Length: 363
Image (tube, rainbow, N blue to C red; front, side):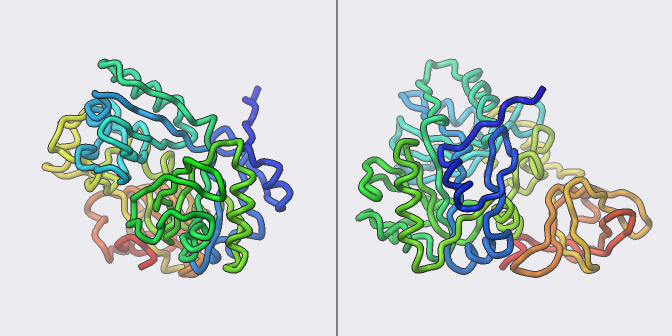
């Protein structure tokens, strides 16, 4: 028996736009509309809009809110000031990652936390388990939609709908105000495409109105509704980790190249273990690679050395629409992790040559 898939508040809108809907993280999600390559290039060159309302949102507030977030996340929440956003992760108690997440600081006692759709319940329970000081938590996941308006024309598109000075926001900042006539809308310069733009949190009851307003505002730039397919190729080109692929319950942020969000200026869950990895070195590392031979790497494909021995596994891979070549990420033994090292990807029992490169793939 399968669990019933949940539908986005804008499900009917996506169907009317010709979206191909697929199961993802317990939801029926649009994977593509006009086609992956067209949508991908629209975001890279102009603007696309993603409905990522499956994501989870929590409010964490009170005098001890900072203490709680400091204990459960790897990054240093204390450096945040009002209006800033931080990328971080929730380490588990055995050396892996519960989830990666964003933390928005509204005030010293009020934080907005955004988590992955497939982990909403898991993350909520994990944070609550460590909430020994009675910090107030609220789960807003079922009440909010999230639209990612991404691309070099993303800010200009949304700017037409608001008096908020979006051009003044630096990367990973946010502001709140009126958008398309709706008050108390949070607009952030976040996103997982590397193409610029904003993400907008909208109460469900205003979602259709704001989606339509954005589509109208972006028409002059050729705005494209964009699905999960292009979201994956866009984030892969930037070398951004996807939970469940490149990071999971068994991967350390140090192995995953996320040392920059792992701060040892404080104690957090299992921090001594990760500190040990940082100081003593890791056995395997997440690297990026580009195909030299023609072929598309996919998750779980074996990575081999010249002698035909397995040295790792692909975690994410695709044909890059921007670079027109196969690219991928995977964990490999440290001796092969150096940039410029030739490796082989086992694609349908053919060993195809690739080379380890520095990420992001798209410079």
